[in-house]
Amino acid sequence: VLPYVEVFHDSELMAGAFGTRIPKSVLTEPAANLTHLLVPALAVTSQGDRLGFGEGYFDATIHAARMESNPPLCWGVVYTAQCVDALPVSPWDE
Image 1: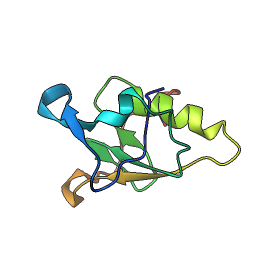
Image 2: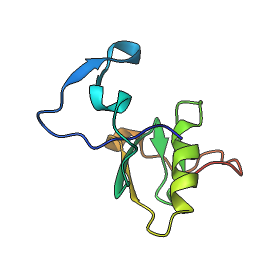
Image 3: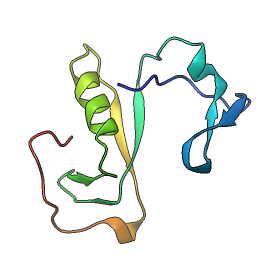
């Protein structure tokens, strides 16, 4: 599971993978108690199936979070064009 941390509008950022910026606190802060998780996707269905980017990081994080007593709400972040009728689904997909 990735070390998620709280991020605020004034959080100090540093260079991350693929030209992204990530909070510096990821190096020093304990993992946050997740209440909401924004989940990127290539495509989604109205049944909640999600096609991710192939590495399984969000699937593993969501699975672990669902084992907690108060799991976070997961929100898919997509454009309307990414909504499809069906997707292939594997047993480990979240």
